[in-house]
Image 1: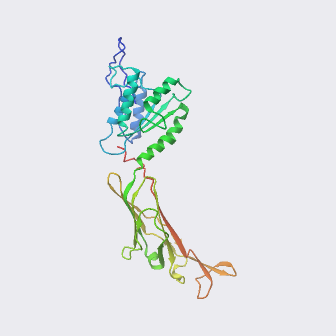
Image 2: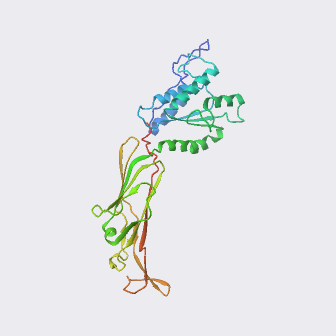
Image 3: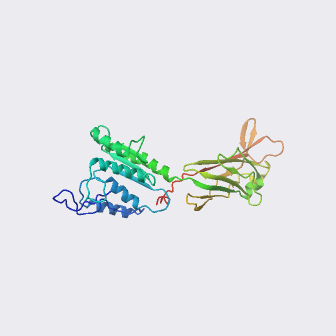
Amino acid sequence: MHQNCLGTLEDTGKEYNQPNAANLMCALTDNKNSVTNAISQYNSMDTEAGTNIYAGLKKAYENFSSENNNKIIILLTDGVPTEYTESYNDWASEESVDSNTKKYIENIGNKVTLISLMSGIADGEEDSDDLERVEGIFGTKEKPTSGYFYNISDVDIENVVNNDVFSNVMEKVQNPINTVKVVDYFPEDIIDNFEFSYVGNPSVGTSSEEIDPETKTITWNIDTLKGEGIATLRYKLKIKDMQNAKLLNKTIATNEKVVLTYKDTGLKDYTVTLTSSPKIQLAEVKVVDDTKLNGKLPQTGESIIIAISIVIITLVLLIIYRKYRDYKDIK
């Protein structure tokens, strides 16, 4: 929040020449240069002392789009408000400032997620009157007026921002994804040489009963998966012919590809194709007098163990839905 106090204080002590109580230094952007230039511009400006939390929050809220997406405002202040109007031509009592600031916090709390950090007025740093005003406006961490509130000492700012605030933000942007479907494509070597069966039921949703002979796929319908949700589907592949010499020492991919499709909260369709796959290699292990020896594939009557003759494949879908990189869901 930037206080636009570049004008001069008149002799009456009641008027500033500048009409705006808060200015937007930089619009929402992922351009690093734009942000650093705005900070440099701010640092070069002459500002007057004062804290107009109402005007700063209002300016921030007005610069969101009208789309029904996640909207988050992070407020960092080192003091209680001293103003609440949109211009410095109107002055108000302390009670009026506190009351109107709280009302606006409650109002935007129905439309955005507000994360407020108050520093410098934690227990023991200021008198009890200031602490009472803080709680009267913002509430407490356990019962905030809106969203989240942290009243912390200056030395705790970095820790709270890196941990608590980051966690709060991620909780909001990790929206659930819907109509989630996973299609697992099997290569010919798996279809021809292995028996397929599930290991229990999927942890979420339903799956096809067996591999489709035409498409060589199984389909897993998950429906809705919440942010940081984990869904698992387990199946096993068992070799059909223990005497098949063609499989000895051959590396086989268990999956040709896995295709994930889903819709975001705006019902936009997404498709993700995973081409990497676990690989197995079959090797013969002879057992002679309880001693394991590598050798050729066994003949009838020989006691052998085929290493990885039963392969347990676990397909784990771990989606941490953060809209990472450009946070597209925040507008």
